Length: 125
Image (cartoon, rainbow, N blue to C red; front, side, top):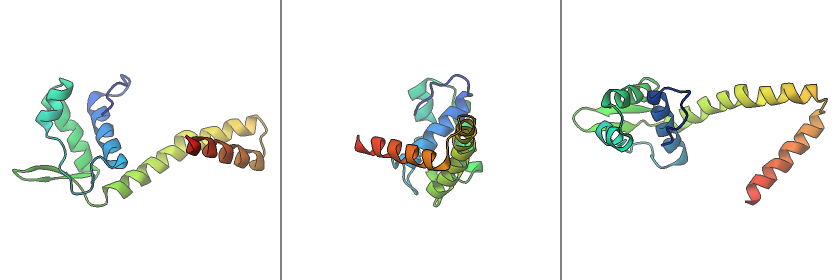
């Protein structure tokens, strides 16, 4: 988990890090999440902070609790996360990029070519 970004509260960074692990396939639907004690010790943070992060996952339907056993990744969590991230991606990146592209007077065709070329560059690595 990457908890470096200091502009975001620690509990939110932990929740996002766990979501990243789910999206990357490190944690699969039905898998048990690391315990709050494990995370607390690993990052040397208060267990209440970790509980707050886990509560975010539960409230969003990404995780669920099995009483006396622990927290688990919910069925459908990956689809929920992909939908959430796609909306955020569109709002934060696509719309801002297109606004700047209009200022620079790019045509739709030029943008399509630029995106395709950049996509191919990334896939070659």
